[in-house]
Image (tube, rainbow, N blue to C red; front, side):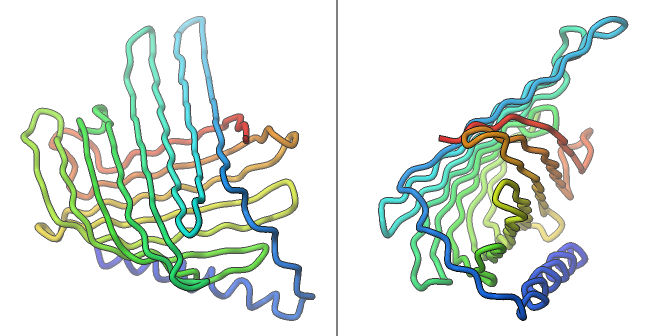
Length: 249
């Protein structure tokens, strides 16, 4: 567990050092304020036929609502894979965060997460977290926020009774605006049980997005989900790599 926290800290130091190299560049004008409401919807689909028949579908969406001084940011994602008409992977995730700025850099947040991933050993998992978020980097081209908080988790593993535990959370979120038409994002998070020191989870989501038109973009993403104490009979690590078409509204 100590090693994973060390990796996060090392990554944070590297990211914080990035803008320093650009200190000699001409300052850019601040970006315009974000819209009151914005959202996205995305779709990915892969199918094969012949000697084997497989299909994979991915659906996702996000909605951000800014009733000042609050911000509500909600996301949902679904992925399903079948081979020869037999489903062999399915996962549904949802997250909603309510936040409010205290200063230009510091904010309070409350967040709810839901996970249904029976093929990874989790029938359902509900997590509620409250904490603070700090903008370590706040530039036109690069932003980095650091989160910390405490919460409560209720999980029902496949074939086992429900368990409940208090949790502690740490995470970082990074965004690099590569150009006017492309950007890179990466979000990493650790959630550790306060009841059992070896029961921790690590999530990392990296994505590269490029605009095709004003409304449409192509998105390449890679998700990693690690459960240090998985349900018996299941592996610790799951990954999802996808290419999706994203519509913005």
